[in-house]
Image 1 (cartoon, helix red, strand yellow):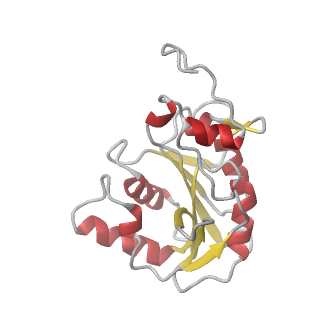
Image 2 (image 1 turned 180 degrees about the horizontal axis):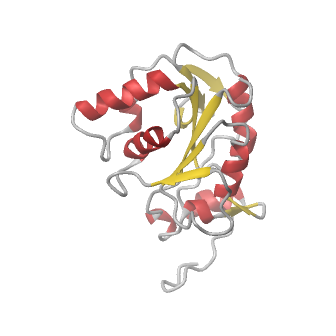
Length: 205
């Protein structure tokens, strides 16, 4: 797809409970925080919405990016995705969805955008062939319909995103090893080369 043919939603919330309460968006990989790397990966988007990250009003946050919170707060990725869709200024043809805790997102988005997509988009698969719905390109209308249908069935709070998207016809895209690796635990951070700084007040290393 060409620049401007797609919009982007970056999911940057979550309590980071397995990381001692650290914000994943603020973790640094190769000298830059993960939120900045995610935003750079979306540079060609017509619009960018970031959902759930703290500190979005600081002077490091890029201009022209809309920041929103999921409803309810800490409501999970399905609720966050719905908030991101609702915040897009217009309905694009395609929407790139990205979790902020993917350190190498800037290397992953290009191959996804270049991939031949299925009727409803394409999704990255990891080395084990498992789909990663938070690293994907969706047809906007199909994504919105899936989210709306799930909401109508009983709401989105803490609902499995894979369940929400189960009916979509997506093409699988196998990326280079490591591009789908996320950071959920201290061990994940260590493997990625991310040093976890001491969190003020709790003494967590």
